[in-house]
Length: 321
Image (cartoon, rainbow, N blue to C red):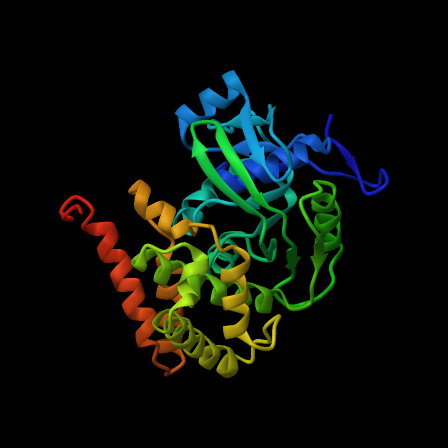
């Protein structure tokens, strides 16, 4: 039986596509709240391990084993009311086939992924059924079947057009049950997405290339200048597109995030170290592309994207220290 939410007025069957660190944390918090979500993960070895041994979570929400439902084959899953997308941005298009298999006729899709472009991919496949959002909950992978919950944080979501829809409010109420931080519906979801994008653009690629923890990036004038130049290019796009950000001083906000996560290695850094593909095309690369479409230039973001892509491509040829 599906869990009963919203004072018994809505039965919500939930699936999370992408059981990486954040998907695992969000799914586990929902599972502990009684929502019993379905986790969908393409890594068969990971699925088999978690099904056999459970998922180990440690960190800010406590250390424990949990046993959420997790699948690679979704043939047994159907009529899902809410599909939360947490795959890497470069896998969003491929995830559409999985969504098609499991979503109900009136089901809602929520993307809280990094970068820009995910909403457009999903909305093209499922027009009018996609909510857009962001979360600052923190998580990192420790190993097979092991994740660390590194921080609580707000989750903001809404309609691309800004209206306060019933489905957005219902999704908010479901996510509030997981006790992972504040969850709100906003009338400026695109502004929330760009606000997070600027933070990711200003920290991830520069800190990865310099091999720095977040807090060390703004300690040096050159690092502060990198942040300043990335932010300036973003602000030109934001101003031209009439997007309203969630903060007044973007550069100061990026520095504040660096300081607030001072000991962290950002997710792009973790991907490079692990030999995985990064989301650079949906962060600095997407900013450069968006700038060009508006007749603007973003040479710093374009160069950062090229450098990260070169790191990805050259891992086998790199000279070790």
